[in-house]
Image (cartoon, one colour):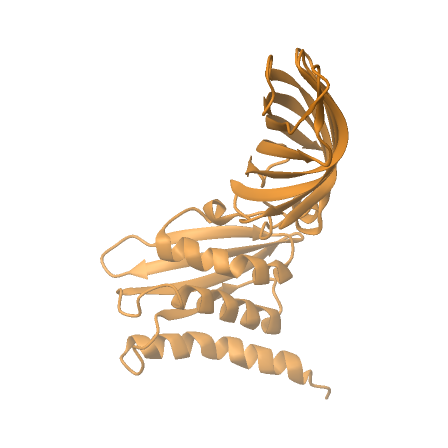
Length: 293
């Protein structure tokens, strides 16, 4: 008779989890909270054992061991979807439950820390979403793109000030962007032109570093740009560098919004109408709506 030793070992481990956890409840070990497997349907024993271990570890590392609660992890399958439910059991109170849908059981490695946080804090599972820990059921179409990187196009408005220039120094214009965006960085190109005096136009190669993977993320960046500008006192067309900073909102969604300040540093001085030269630094504040291609 052939025996699948790995499946047998997994089944034995899974069957021992409730006994170990509830042995803790009787006083054998109160150093960790009580967490155990519950009903398991449609999931192989070895996968279920590992999943319960990950979820219970995430919960017990975040809750007080003597908070009076125990936790039961139920798992089942509906077609291709795995449904995981954590029940919080406390004497004298109604049970609380948290359910998460997973495209495949392997996604538990991504979801377990968020499940532990949701159980420990009482916040919704969705509240802990970032661009790097989405599960496919939360955002079927865009979850993989956000983890692996995605191509975005955008357009918006900017306000302009020519620092160091005399005469008409403030204006406005339009900006267009294309960029490749990953959870921690973005790189691309942008073009911009003024729609009122002072005249301004240019193109830049852009890079940004995000300091958070949350829905609202600050960033800093910079790049190279060719910028031309002119008013009634100065004019310049020069290659230069720029630095930027701002934040991007709604990063876990299909579309997002960027607010960015840019300061351009031309490599040559501007010419004045008097025949001299002057250092002038264009500064822009732009609001851009970004969407995937």
